[in-house]
Length: 239
Image (cartoon, rainbow, N blue to C red; front, side, top):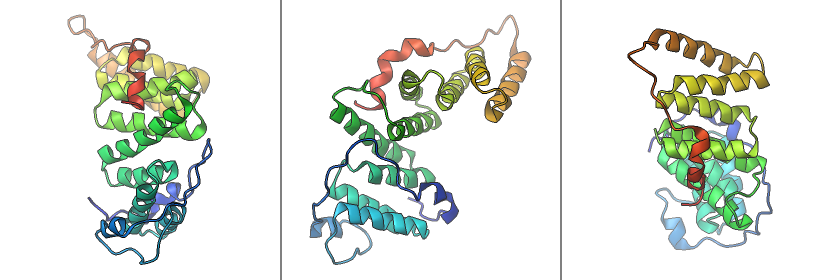
């Protein structure tokens, strides 16, 4: 795992994500076996999960990425369902291009939310939506289109006009080779927010691509419509 990451890449992650549900009290203490599982020595004093998490935030703010990663991992070892620590560790994994590890942590957050809510269709809060969006983006980067579609649909079920998820939907269609459907998604964005920079740029690129490749003998690849993929929604959280 690469640890030489620029400090400034983490500026967006220094603030802890806002919780949308009550976090349980974290008063468990770390055992010597957990401490010894790290490759570099932790402090000899006992830690609780909250303190380990706060130390991870401090380390991250100072650009001490390895220390931050170890303290977030320590907090998770103490409290496996600690969503803030899972989110922050996933953020580091993303910067280090350990995308599979990041997906695993982010899915734990959503799985625990679904367990607490008793349903994978429970209304999502701002924090959960942020996690779902990041999961969709990671799955797309990894070429896992069914899971990317699942997460994107989950976001659109919450808000059909959510621009971030409409953009993800467009990019999924691009990856599947369905330029026509991608254009439709981008047009929705431009209807909601005319002049949206990213959507405008993508729209121009897609129109040019469509013009260059539109021949009677080469019809565009037809991707599965997003609305027909609803059965895949649970894969974004519970397995």
